[in-house]
Image (tube, rainbow, N blue to C red; front, side, top):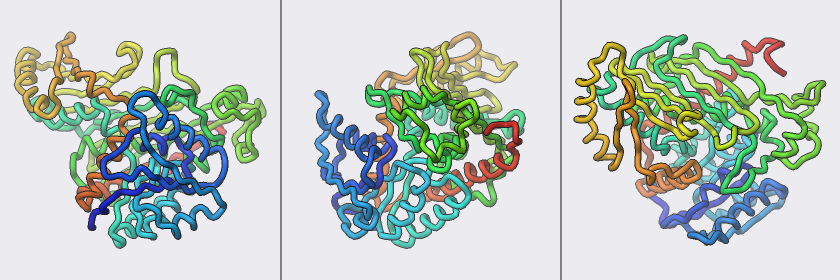
Length: 442
């Protein structure tokens, strides 16, 4: 692939705030003029408001110039116009995989928000899209922000120190070697403002169930941390051992607070009980094996976080010499905290010497990172500069994608691992639906 001289962005049907977060900052070699193609309505207007807020903020304002087309033939107009060479797609997931396939068929690079597929049918189409991208010599990449969270980066780093971590255990389905749990909230603040969610976000046929949405990040991290820079063949290496799904219920008042709508749209009628509560299949859990390693990922959506809290993450990697655990609860002040926890029976003084000797390797890559003993464990602390927040990670992903464009290729493992990831989530949904009992939710 020859790298494009100047990157020109196209935003296609932005319906999720992640589309705007890609433009929270400016980039070298990216044209400030961005063409937006979308159906008229709230989704595109909310997107443009966020871009305008970035352009008019007092500190480091951006200078984006949005050229907007909202006719019914927006998709065809985008394809005919050829106004850019990179399409950013973050919105209604019912259409997303088709948008991706159409864009790469037209010879356009694609930076897509997760999930790129929400069921087995769209997974098959996504596989076709990756084949078309290879044929047309364009890059297709998804926005995996969690790889840029410092505690996760350090968890991965320490797991690659055999003298500290040992080797990754195999685990069992009941006691997995790696666990990742994520708690999210429908009501939240983005860029300092209460987030207004589109009503379709609560329709799993348009947004996708929780088991194929946020779990995308968790499955990605399992692969990225346990098998760094190794390609995963989903047909050979992935085995789903169990999956389940359940609903979060919202009252009409809660629905109105987060969407601004005083009534449920007709397409949500199927999910509303006799009590008037909206049941959303936003929660899910997957037990599976990757190359024989047992893993578990789960996602839970609540309406609103406790005061002072936000979305939270728990992660444990079990090594033969120590466990690496990220906690983000009340005790940690709702900030992610990485703990190194030696195996039972370990000589702690000897372990401390080995750990301190190993810190040079970590500090070479992450200057300023320190360890402090707490009882039988060691807490890892990173300077504030590394804690740049979830919103900043979108720019970091975009920078990585721009680097790949400049180099003309992505690492060999990225595409097979994206395919393996979406196979895992969509296959788990298929299994969870088969196993759902009539009493397990709406």
